[in-house]
Length: 291
Image 1 (cartoon, rainbow, N blue to C red):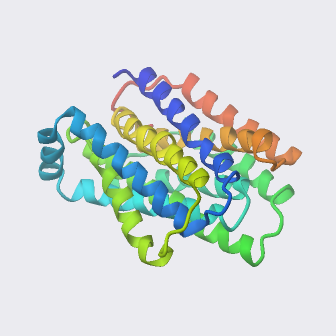
Image 2: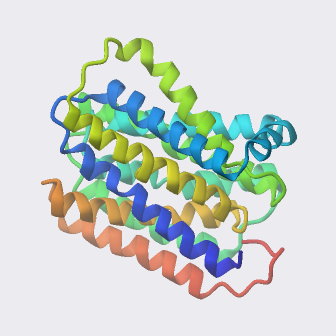
């Protein structure tokens, strides 16, 4: 897979991820913990079927050869899956998406500390511009950060922290082991952890259909594809590209979920998008150079 193909695939994944907020706004009765259980379960089953179609031996070899790496990545997926749905039940979609956009900063810092690879000026510039756009959203448009909303933002902070660890783990693993299995592990851990708290399960057929859509199309498929694309990108590049989920997610929720973003949110989204375009178009360093 070339760098350009990896970038295109990651953008496609962000488009699929971005439907999570708008779909969740059409639930009839499903709430945080129950949505986490069903969404994570369907995601785990999707990846399990995927891996079986590719060959059970390959899946088992992934667990054996990857060792702790695949389990660490799986645990981080579990944190992201769980925090996302719980945070959405507590605050606005835009608040959750904007909070998780802190991932590039956390990733760049963690990659520098763990991998000892310096982040070049081009990437730092993209991070700064994106961060300014995000700050504009917070300062001018994100309101109600008290009580339930504040708790939602606090829960959402688990997403960028776990994402940073995950992408650094993927980059450190390199192109050897296929960590797609980690998505299945993450979904399984997430579902098992919340099941006792979500029990008894009582959900409408309508909501179950939507959660199946989220588990398969919004989680299982794009997460597997993202893990494969990330093997050809640096951890910082991956987390920067994933910022596109914020732009797509806010626009979808605005158009189909009844949450209208303010002018600062739209301008901030444009800043994020512009930073990504700048970063990719100006990328000229050969492979192996700092990114």
